[in-house]
Length: 379
Picture 1 (cartoon, rainbow, N blue to C red):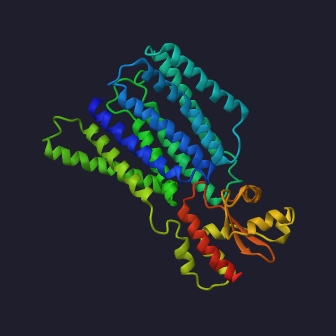
Picture 2 (cartoon, helix red, strand yellow):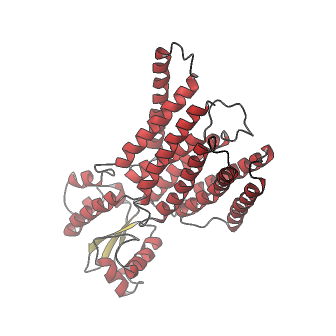
Picture 3 (cartoon, helix red, strand yellow):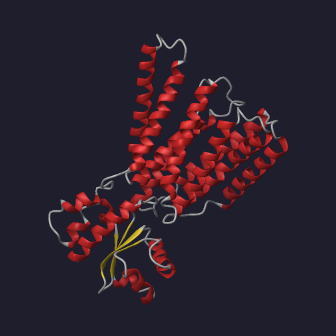
């Protein structure tokens, strides 16, 4: 692969990952999924940065760091999958992930620059095996997930499935002679999936649409270059397509991260509700309609002081209020697989537990707060 083109694509992927990390970092204090994703993107950004400087800085510490970061990526991804499932991975899987991360880190330090084909093959097999395990975990026992959490999980699952062949192509010692390596595109794909989720409208279908747009841009780029360079005699068509696709992916990530508007359609749905009674307003949008009504009977098992703290807010999440309020909210959120509690009335105490997704932007909190005002008046 042309080194200059490879460096450009890697730099674009690095910018995309940093943009995605910035969007996720704003949600990290409110979402454990976002916190894990921020860690993953930190490692991916570090890996891309090291790959970018490695050809120009022939120093053993750079190669050791590159190998070490690659070794810890699977366990960081496993932590993310655990949060998405809201369940711990089997103990054996966690031990194997930790053993691989530590083992390959030691191997990187001891071998240094002498990273043999056998060692590269072992690292590739370890990463691919861990990805396969994560796919199995994400597809197993999904009944306890809410609608929004399932949507987030499905989008990340699709992204992982698509990154497997891209990640495999990145090992030159295992697959020599490939004109384009896929590691940077795997990072772009994950960043694009996250940007969609952070904007509040992430679904597998929309991720595929974004990928089709990016790939289409690559094809258009080839056509333009073909005309300008008289048959692409200077630059291979595949490299032109790769560069254009990467640029399109970055632009899509920036556009998605910018968000804007009512991403969930919640406000529009409430505005067009045929009447203002409680049942009609709750049925107006899937986020509300799939929620669980919690009345005095459901709340009877919790201390009155905890319920009072929760009812002090129109909308409550795991990051709302002081520590005692957050603890009380987490008990209810975990019990009903919800991300937010919407107050319907103080007397009698009634709440609506909704699952809006594991990655929720501050804009969604504002939408839910406005919805809570309307619903509480109708209750």
